[in-house]
Image (cartoon, rainbow, N blue to C red; front, side, top):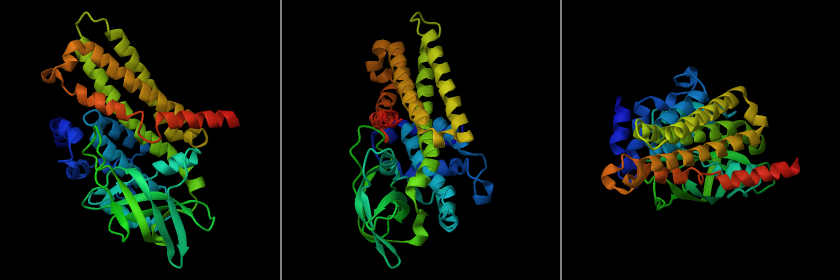
Length: 352
């Protein structure tokens, strides 16, 4: 067992239940070199592509969804820089992000909902001589380390220009991080809201000038790495259900194996789609896959519960079940939620 796996195994319950170890998650992920996975070697990474990042997030999620959530936030922000036309921004920011010295928050959940016609942008950008003045708020961001962070956001220019994607820092004047959200789980993920009041941003911090053309290209990576959380959690639950059912008379083994096969088929489809680029032009297929993986998670936890029976209600018999049950409740609501994805699918089908 490597150092990170041992740490996650020992601290998964605390990471879920309180914020005592929240500042340690990112350094632990960086120390295991996970943040470099899927990043080109020429840019300080370990090589590979986004499929490798998805697999790494899934592996972490098997031990702690809190840590996987932080991993997703950091690695997704890194992906934004990799796909940004602003090479100077990536060159300036990537070293600290890859080393875990700087936390990166995606901040684009609002933007992804905007892209699907679900929600308006929450930040207004007023053009100024040297850039923009930002005003607004983001209600739910993860990986907002108290030691400092940078975050991405989609902004609506007040002059009618196309929405843009910018990066802002926690130490910018006018940026206020709220208190940690009072979550029922994943409490060690540094999840909070952010308010921006007259925040000055220059062109050097522009990730993409036209969000409407840039977001569809980065969305498969955003959602693909998010799906890694579902894959890892489902695998962990199915493994526990299989171990309990082995040699028993509960007759769950065939159902467990069938669901495991379904999970791996969905995973293979996901990996192929993010690699060959089909999801860039076929967003509905990606939405349906995210919905299907969330359903697998719910089925896996139900099978684990059925395998445990009454022992699931005994503290001394948990072996992580109650934590996984709480973690599973997060999968349908993480933005974009299943309800939002289903609404987007209905809109797309209606337009077609």
